[in-house]
Structures are given as structure tokens and as C-alpha cells.
Image (cartoon, rainbow, N blue to C red; front, side, top):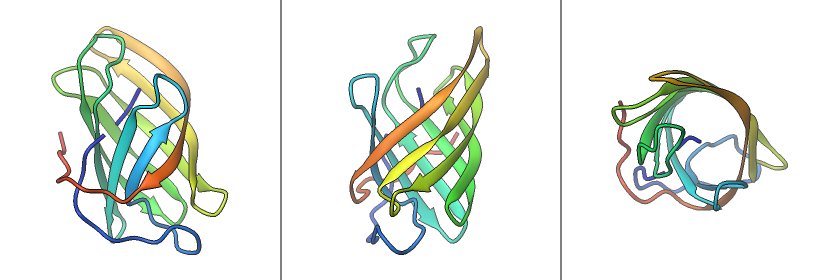
Amino acid sequence: MLLAAVAATSCSHGGTNTWSGRWRREWGGGDVLTLVQHGDRVTGAFGWTWCTNVQGGWVMGTAHGGTLTGRFGHVGGPQGTLVLSLVDGNRHIRGDFRVGSAGCTSSAPFQADYVGTAAAPAQAG
């Protein structure tokens, strides 16, 4: 229910905590969340819909090592908060999100797997 498209970057996944890259979520058709990290700031975008059928949205947050806390929202639609962690050698994201606006209230786990480097500019809301 969250995030897909952000900025050109080179990153390594394995030893260094980096959120930059494309991440395929494990449910909902395998849609992609794209994130870019600059210092402790992480921005990103996604293309899937949620409970109000608004297509696409943004992510922004702060990384503290392998933990990302922040906000996300669908363009013109619901917004929420997220807490995510890099796990298994920084190849997977696990965490939770909570939505509570625009007639949509939900809380659920979020899981995604690293599938490549980021390639397009991030859109923040």
C-alpha cells in the first residue's frame, strides 16, 4: 500500500545500510517502491493504489542505520506513517505502515525485496 519511482544513484547492498534502490513488495501484484537516500534523508515514490483507488504516491523519511521512519501518501489521497527495517544483508525490507486519513484507516505489515538500483527522480508530497 505504499510507494514507486526515484533518483539516479549507485548503491551497494550488503554491508552498508542504504535504502536507495527499487524494492518489489511481496503482496499486491509485486509492485515496485523506489527509494533514494542522501545522508539520512530518504525519498521515494510508488505506483499502486490503496483504499481510495488513487494511483501512485510519495514517501519521505529519515534513516537511522537500518531503520527508516517517515510518512507516505497517495497523490491527493490518504496519508500515513511507516517504520521499516533493512534485514538479511540489506536485501529485504520489513516493517509496518499505518493510514488514517481521507476515509481510509488501515494498519498492516510491509515487506519488499531489493530488485535493483533507482532510476528516476523522487516526487515528494
